[in-house]
Each structure stands twice: as C-alpha cells, then as structure tokens.
Length: 276
Length: 276
Image 1 (cartoon, each protein chain N blue to C red):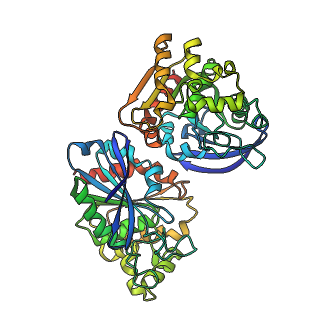
Image 2 (cartoon, rainbow over the protein chains, first blue to last red; image 1 turned 90 degrees about the horizontal axis):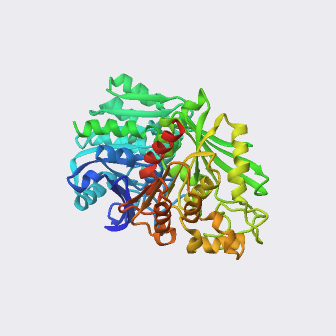
Image 3 (spheres, helix red, strand yellow; image 1 turned 120 degrees about the vertical axis):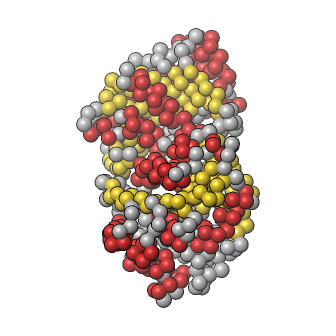
C-alpha cells in the first residue's frame, strides 16, 4: 500500500492511498478519514460507497463527512467505484464500465477480468484496511449515495453480521426494474435475471430483511428519482415490516448539496449503533 | 441576471447566477447561498473571496460553509476570481490572468480592459446582489482564502464602514514583499510600487488598522507559507495594537480540508458581529 497524500482535517487525517488489487487486477485508490480519536485508540469505521462517475475523491471533498466523523470519533473509508486504467475495459456511456462498477463481480466479457467490485469491497479492501490501520474491525457501518446506496444496502443484506447499521442517500433501490440496473446487470452478470436478484435492495429486503438499523434519505426534486425507484424500497420495507426510517426530503435533488445537508444525521445515526 | 441553477441545501438555496459585467466587460458568474431564514426576512451577508485558480464553484462545493450559514442564518456570496472568456487576456501561468485577478483594477496592458476585480467586488456585484436578493445591505462581513484572504483584508481596510467583521484563511498577507504579489501587482498596476501599497494587508493594517473584529487562521504545514508571509501580518497587528485573533493551526496545509476544518469558527465569529 502506498500513501498518496495525508492532510490534516478537523484535527484528524484525510489520507489517500493506493495499492495493487488482486480482486480488480489493477491499481486501486481509496481515501480514509481518521478522526482525532484514532491517535489514541482504534475507532469504528463507516464505509461510504460513491455513485456513478465518482472516484474516491468526490465524497471526500464534497460530502462534508469529516466534520461529523471527527465529532463522533468514526473513521470513514471512501473506495473508488470501479477498476481503472489502460488495460481495463470501458464503455463510452457514463453509466457502464469505469466509474460504474455497480458493486458486483462481473462474469461476462469484456468485464469479467477486472470488474470485481463486490469482492474488492467485501473482501480485499477490508483486509488491506484492517492490516494497515488501527481500526475496530468488529465495529463497522455502511452508507452510500445513488449507485453507492445500492452497494451499501445490498452488501449489508449479505453481510448482516459485519455491519451494525446501514444508510443510503438516494439509492438505486430496485435496479432489476430500472434502466439504472438492467443495462449494467445484464452487461456484467449476463441475461439470466435470476442472477441479478442478489443485487437488488428492494428484492433482498422483501426476501430476507436487514437485521440492523436502516436510514434512507431521498430528495423529492431528484431528477433521477424515476430511475432510483424509492417506491419499490418503500413497499419492501412496509411489506417486510422492516424497521427503518425512510425520509422523502422536500425539494432536494441528487447532488452533493443534498448529501451534505443530511450527512450530520447519517453520521449520528451510525454513531448511535457503533457506540451502542 | 440569469439563474444558472438553484439547489436546495441545508434547507436553504444554493444558487449560481450569471450576468453581464460592466466592470469586467464580460459575463461573470457568482454563487449565493441563501439560508432557510431568508424565506421569511432579509439576512446578513458574508462575502467569501476565493484563491488562485478558483471559480465561484470551489468554495461552494468544498468549504462546507452552508452547514454553518444555515445554522446562523447568514447568506454567503462566492464571486469568481477574475474576468473570463475568449476576449479576455490570459497568461500561461496559473498565478496571472484568468483565475488570478488579485482583487485590483488593472491599469496596464493587456489587463486594463477586463481585470477590474476591485470595482467588481466593491461596487458592481454588491449593487447586483442587493437589487436581486432580499439581503441586509447594512449587515455585511467578509472572508477569503489565500488570494481571497488578501482580497478580504484589503477590501475591509478600504471599506471599514461596510463590514462588521473580517476574517481570512491563509491569506496572501504581504504581497508587496512576496512572489505571490510582486509579479501580479507589477503586471496589473505597473512598476511604481507606491501604487501597490493600497493592496497589501500588512501595510494597510500598520498604517490605518482595521476598525472591526479580525480573525486569521494559518496552517503551520502550509506548503505556500513562505509566499503568504503571516509573519508580516503578525508584526503589523502587534505593532498597530490591532485587536485580532491570529491562529497558527498545527499541521494544517493550504487545502480546502484546512478551510473546512475552521469554517464553523469563522462563521460563528462573523455571526457574532453581524447579529450584535
């Protein structure tokens, strides 16, 4: 692992690190914010998964997470959203290929060799993180925005023992029923829709629930709301009798201004679970 | 004036607007954050002047100001840092020409026709702002980062009746004695150094003081600290017996991570003066 940069931020350290990734077969970059409390003892970790077109950098600079992470004493890891580089397949569209890994392990050509973000986020990066930093492995939570909200919800559903809480900002909530999902899942996983269901938060919650506190914020003025399908998530939560707080936030759009506006709430929500 | 975008943010509105500028002879863009309190009554205004290479956008997305502006009920205006466009002179260097207006009215070729940021910030943009938005013209404060800190301090010194408080993040504090200053002041104002003194915060404070509360933060790990010359500012403040708080912040660099870390303090500082 190589340190790209370390910058003081809210009395903690905002770092950017890179490493050769076995899962993705390329170099990967991630950001980690360590709050000031990390100087004296291991701290809990919140995963923040980003959306389409993002790298590790967007949320690190625009989501305003560090102010609240420092207040609560929680580290925040910001992974990249896909493999990258010259030998890595790509597509001209913004919503497929590099910057659009969708948090799955691709099985189809040309994506299969590198697009293994599921393994990267759930297996390889945790090992790198807990080997290199003094963080509380037994004390993790997960959140994300848009495609990253999809990632957070689906990963939490598959690793209920790992995460104490899960939240999402405007998640892609029902990708098997949306153009933000059907296109990518068929490209990465093939035409058999049975294999897509494991990566659809609304289907997973209806089927198995999420045995942890759940918070979701969705802006009512989000230009992408028809693609995000919060109604599918809301129905699943209600049908499953899933304990959850789903907030339709009046007038907010899909931008980081929306994410930043509710970051304090999400951080307090996770801190309550992490320090319970 | 044209509305480029308006986005809900911390229950207020983050807007971006453009207009034809007489002062600069080109179209100019600025951002304005209106806190939720602005829906019911005129609110005070904090000017945030940005640094080299920035547009209206950098601080708007990365400084984290809106969280605290919403809390205190203060609007924040983020102007651009220079004229821009095809007919506008420029230089290959990042620190001269477009993105580097230095908050002066240029008198020299090729800059004189457009580079009139002093007039733009002190005269034209205020008129546009108070004509188009319901803000408290009698209740203004000013801050800025780096070149924008230089702008904030020098403008406050020349308009003491206009601003109730002034602050700066890592300001270019003594441009007449620095390569961040001598190059630009000679290009924009000519070789006669007597004309530069009106745009040097350390000289102005020593000469006339700043009859308002003053707060300055400077990171000790700032890579540009030798160009910023906080020691000149500190000396002027001490010699003048200028009431001020000058904080050397241990380990912080020149980035927005530094600015964001202390934005809450600056906003509270200005709010105290604005609501006194």
